[in-house]
Structures are given as structure tokens and as C-alpha cells.
Length: 424
View 1 (cartoon, helix red, strand yellow):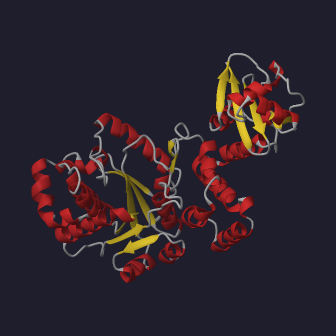
View 2 (tube, rainbow, N blue to C red; view 1 turned 120 degrees about the vertical axis):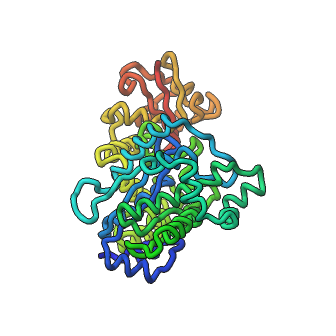
View 3 (cartoon, rainbow, N blue to C red; view 1 turned 90 degrees about the vertical axis):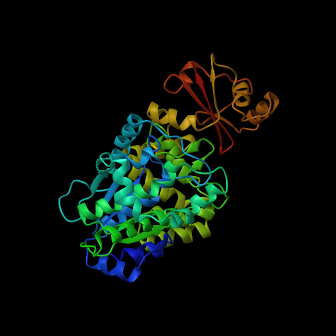
């Protein structure tokens, strides 16, 4: 089996483990069963979840059995945020999101091939729904020290501010119950998560020891991964438009691809090691290429194609790559399917028009020129393009046959500045 601990350490994502020597032995004696939980607090997972999703995938490829736990119960409560109380969603909404998340997780793990590494999908609503308030307090709550619960960083930060409800304060009990139930049902002996989950995970370890004593499936373990940050100080997985979702209806495959393609050179090495399944030799070669010729963006392009294929499929990836190239004159815009083109153009400065107008007017409309006189000068100097064709005259006006799919014009100033107008 692959030494997954060494693999995670080389990739720079390993934050903490409990007894590492004992964990290595359990992994070597494998297959080991592990889990990671994902709460349905929105209709889709986002790229911030990929660190943990792909870690489950790495463990499965290394010969272990992953459990993807979707928190139908914990999602009704919400893991406490450091700054403010979560808005509680109704049961029907959360259960709908559970289905959406289960579908997304199925794209990353093998749930179908029988054998010791076949992935398991679980929902903690199954074992939590029937637990009464008295049972929760008597059977589980008595094993939790309030002093330890108060010592958790999230709790301390909230108590120093606006405070925290008892509902969110109790979240750790429910997550610990998850580990206990999965340990009993599947022999699950490892929980993974982000480094901010260390307190929740170790509380689960303690609950297993207190209730089961000799731990019939062997010692339980914890492993956390480093939380990603961006070099420019902004939050990973966020853009000006909000989160980068895995659902193509919320973030188009084109926008998903562009997120990775536009990654800062200072971040791309960490992104490659965290998210790529390429070999160490391939990744180190891409890192050298970035250092020597950053303008080529070879590492960003490789990661964008790999992850877009993984999340959205090879066909969608090919379509968005073709669109990305065609927008900059390296392919035929008219050959792009309408949906992919519309998604690509929605990411550009764009405007809707009621009738065709001179190119100079259109350039100003989408902020490719500060004024009509500047737009005319750009055309005169040969720097204006419509659908990748150079505009010949200052008074040029597009005609109906120029419209791609009967509705779009793609405008470009110079090599890199793009905009679009839609007739309708």
C-alpha cells in the first residue's frame, strides 16, 4: 500500500495526527476505514471542500475504505462559525441539500466496486433522529466536560464577542456521536478534517474511549489537514462573485476552470500539491516551469484541466478549454456550443443591446475604451476586434450575420482585454 501519511506530508497538507506511529501501523495493517463529514449548509459543496474530498479519494486509492458522511442532522445545527451564529434552515431544505451533496460526492469516490475499499455513504440523521433529549443528556452529554468545551477556540472567540447559543455549543456532542456510531457500525478508526476541526474530532475519540472502553476495533485516530489561505490575504475558494461551487448551475464549468487558471503564481505550488493527483515528478516539473516561465502558466493550466475534468467531466473540460482559447483568437468562436459560450461571456464585461451599433460605441459600452474618441483611436491603430476579426474602419457597424448563435458579439481590445454584447 502507498504510505499515505508520507504522501500527505510531502504535499504539505498534514496538520496534526494523534499517535502517528500507531496510525502508521494501522494503515500498514489495513485496509483501514476512515470518514470525513460534510454538513449540508448550502445546496452545493464548494472548492474549499475539495481538500477533504480529495483526501478521502487519496486514502481509497492507497487501499483504504472511505466513508463520506453527509450531516443531515448536524446540518440542521451547523458547526459554529468563529464570528456569528448560523441561520438555521428548515428540515425539508436541509434534506434536499443532503441529496445534492451525496450526488456530488459520488463523483469522487468509488461506491460501486465491491471489495474492502468500496466507499460508504452515510447520513447522521439516521442515528440521531430517534435520540431523545433525555438520552442525549444522560447517555452522551455526561461524558463531555464543560471546561473542555469552553476551551475550544471557536467557543472562546464567540464568548468574547456576541456569545453563542446552547444549540451551537452542543454541536460537538453530535459530531462525536457520529464517530462513535461509525466506529461501532463499520469499524471506522480514523476521522479526517480541516485543522479547525481538531477539537471536534478529538472529542469523538474521547467519547469512543469512555463508552466502549477497550475499543473492540482497535484504537481510534484523528488526522487534520492544513487550511488553505491565499497569498494575497483573501479567502481561498472565494471570488468577487462569491464562492466557487461544484454545482455547474451555481458556478459554470468555464468559471470553475478560470478560477484555477487565474491562480496566483505564489499559490500554485500549494494548489498543485493539495489538489493534483499527478506524480511527485510531474508536479516538481510544473513547479520548475512556473519558476522559469511564469507567463506560460503551465502549472495553472494543468491543474485547471485536471480538476475541471474530475469535477465536471472530460467533455465539459474540452468545451471550456476550447472556449478559453477561442476567446483569444486561437479557435473558432462559432464552433462553440451556445451554452458554453454564454457561460464564458457571462464572466466578461458585457451588456445587452436592443439594436446593432457602431463598434466604437460597443467598445465604450463594455468599458474596453473610456470614450468614443479613444475607441475610434483603438480601431484606427488596429487594436479592435469583433469575433476575433480585426475591425477595419472607425465607423464599422456589425451586421446580423456577425452575431454568434444569433445573439452574441465578442469584442477585444489588444491581445487580452475582452468584452461582449448580447442582442435582445
